[in-house]
Length: 485
Image (cartoon, rainbow, N blue to C red; front, side, top):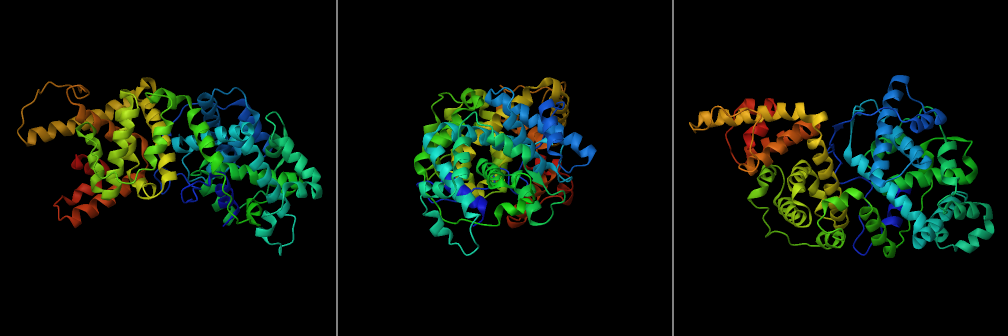
C-alpha cells in the first residue's frame, strides 16, 4: 500500500468495508465531461505560476494560467470565498500536474475535476474546524514525517504505535510546527506551497502518479498530495530539489479507523455547497442520501415513462447497473426540484459506464450521488446560458428534429410540414424533449472516447442479440445515437 492509499484509509475509514477511493468513480476510464469556458487570467494565479517557476513552455503556460484561473474563480464562486492565497497555490500545483501533459485538452474544463477541487477545499476547511479531525491529522502528520527519518529497517507497525507525546519529546520542532499549522490563520501551509521546488524534468513513475491520478483524483488524494508536500517541507526540505516520486519512498501500512469523523466530514463538505441547497427540496436531505446509498435490493424500481432517455443505456450496461440507475433516478427525482429532473436523467445517461464499480460499494454510491447533483446543476447552467451555447444547441436541435421528420416521412406518418426545425413543445412532447437534451449533451459535452465506447458496446449488443443493422451505422456516432432512439 503506498503513501496515498494510506492517507485515504486514514481519512475515510468507515463502518462498512473500505475500498480505497483514489480516483473519482464518475471520471475514470475517460468517462469525463468536457465543457468550453471563457475567462481571462487571474492576477493571483499568474503570480503563483511566476513564483513557482514551473517547467512549462510559454504558450502552454499562458493557456494553463487561464484554465487554472477558471477553476480558482469557480471554487471561489461555489464556496463564497474572496481572495485566498492558499487556494490559489494549491489549485496552481494540482492544475500544473493535471494539465502539463499536452495531450490533455486545455481549452475545455472538466466539471468532475472541478467537483473534486471543491470538495478538497471544503475538506481542508473542515480539517481546520473540527477538533477530532485536527487531532487525527496532527497524529498522522507527525508519524508520517518522523517515520521518514528512521532507518529503512524500522518496522512501520511498531512506529505507528508510538504515542504523540513521546514523539514530541524527540521531535519538538516538527510537532510544534504541525500544531501551529492546524490554526486557520497560520502561514505554514502557504509557505509549504510557495517554497517547494520541483526537479525540472520529472518522467517515469512520478509523472504517471501525478499527471494521471490528480486529474481524476478524489479530495482525499488531493489532500494526500498536499500532505506529502507538507511532510517534505517540515522535514527541512523546502530548499532542496526533489521529485514527486520521493513522496512515496517510505510507507506506513496500518489502517486506522476514525469513523466518528467520517460522516461529519462528508456531511460538512456536501452541505456547504450552495448549489446542492438550491437543487434539493429539503436542505437536510443528505441523511436520506446516506440511507439510500446503503440499500441493496433495488431491482423492483422502474424509472417511469418520464425518463425515456435512460432507455438507451439498456443496450450498453448490465441489468444490475440498470436497476440501480432507475432506482437512483426515482430517488433523486423525489428529493430534488422539478427543474432539475431532466438534467439528472442526462447525467445518469452520460455516466452509465461508471456504475459497474459504483454499485458494489456503499461509499462510492454516497459520493457519486452528490456529484451527480453537482453535474446536473452544471448542465442546467450550460443549457440556460444563451449567450454561450444557444447557437450550438439550436444546430444540434435542428439536426435531431430533421432526423425525426425523415423518420416520419419514411413511415408515412402525417405531421405539420410547416413545423420549424428549431421548434419543439416540451410540454406536449416531454419524452422527445428528454431524448433531445440527452442527444445535445452527448454532442456538446462528451469526448470521443465516450462515443467510441458507446458504439463498441452497442455493436456487441446487436451482434449478441442478432439484430440486423446497416454497416454504415457505426461510421458516425450520430448515426448510432439516432438509431437507438
